[in-house]
Length: 190
Image 1 (cartoon, rainbow, N blue to C red):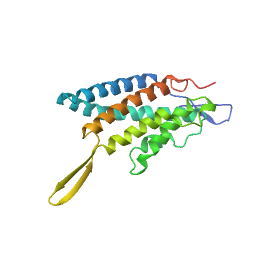
Image 2 (tube, helix red, strand yellow):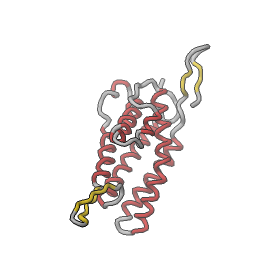
Image 3 (cartoon, rainbow, N blue to C red):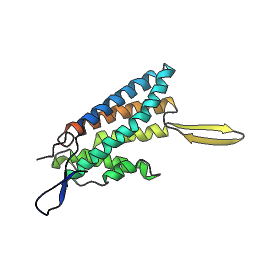
Image 4 (cartoon, one colour):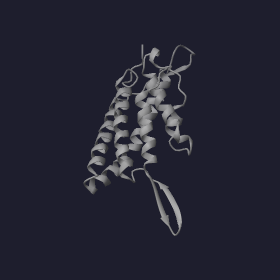
């Protein structure tokens, strides 16, 4: 990350990273994912395209998340998770259930006026609830050889796919709000 010095011998202050072009790509990918996933209920080829898009969206989202988290830290608004944990929290078992939500909530709050930072970020909470519901609705139970086997696979059931489409729509709203604001376009709040 590029830093600039506040004054001679002073600490380096991080410059916000532009998010708008990355957010545009992410928004387009998410929108195409929603269309492919919903169309996939009727046409199998679109269902496969939706699954492939899901894997294409993941790295773009993680880069956006890292940059947005770095910008939130640079804004001076206290963050519960570092930019590294905003991304890494998705990959660590058990903590992936709440670290990403805390990171996105912090990013959201950093873009709000100080008097609105203490409230619950309802859009982020709805997005996270849908994300968790997509996992829960991907549970499949089968009885084989007298025993019951359960597996969890995202995108494996119709309800999981539908919930993922809703999750993507909510994420589009979050990405556009965060990236279009004063912290998202590379400008620091004055």
